Length: 461
Image (tube, rainbow, N blue to C red; front, side, top):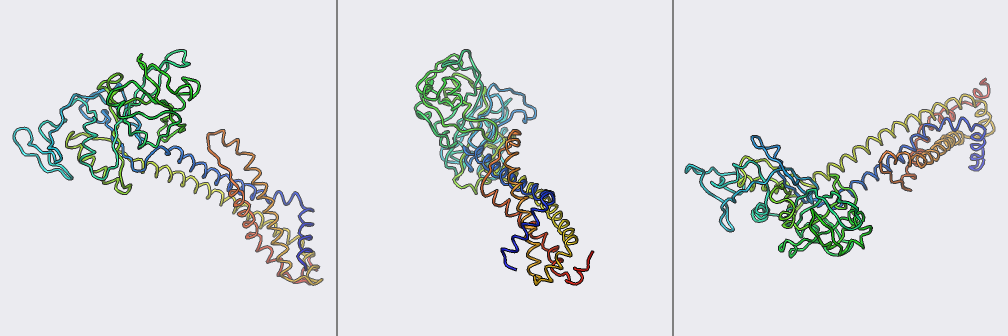
């Protein structure tokens, strides 16, 4: 039998049984729609993770202190740790006026324990803490001196910065009344470490820091809220806690990030300016270091603990790296995608079994037809091909309907704050899986039909 005749015969059988085709393909419809949505949700999740972490450096390590973790100490903070470039919020804690451990320039710290006892050797870089170590404080606050210690004594760092954040009332621009915003005190290298880009103007400079100048850089959303547009914000003036600050520039829009704090919603001022005019010593900042080699992050975290233990014995710091958090988010997204794929596979199997059962019934109903076809010269191959094509066409119809269903319910899924990124690749894979499922599960019934003996088939009632 010629292929054109075979295709015409398949088409006739499908057209005469429209309702059966649609009902048979229902499982494939669900499976196809699921596959397409799984791919779309997976891609959406990947893009969401990429956007959340786009301003994070994989080699960033944040060091913070949370006074609530210190047993036997009580403290409070008017300022909180700035979300560091590594993407982690800092802990709270009141700064205590502490003395700095004596360290020889360019060398290792040393010193005897109180009472003339010699300090035991600590693992890592430094011997035991000095007599003036910052241990007997009511609370601990990281300082720029600690930042400098890490920069000097921890090898393998490409950059170090310190930052804090607090809330303060802001006035100016088109604001009708004072509004509370996140104020971030940062160093000049914060923008580079955090991968922040400017729309207008320039970021804070070392000169701004040294002079404790009242200048600021606005996040994209803040600039629009206060001035109406980023262009009107540039070179404008806002009032933070009643003091005027000149707007040096505006950051590019970043969107939301992993911890829920976005540069778009913050006002950046020089670190020393913030300490002088806003928080005083009542702030617990975050120190962020950048590893030259991402593979050495764990070693750097260990070395940071060793350095800080010399200045703050028996004090526990929170040391978190951005790379681990990024990896955890990606693995979580991959796990969700795999679960959805597993669900789609189960649906496809159920749909394929449905096609198989219907074809078995069809073979039973069309036994006489098969006998006639064989009697007029159709080979086993022709019969096999006819039923396989019917199964493939039924599954193709189901796959196409599944793609249309996926397109139709995407807006509904997005209403639940799930990011869906539909793609042509997803549609093609959905159609492919659908056709393959129907073909595979339709092969055995087709094979059974092709093996029928013509005489027996013709006598079948």
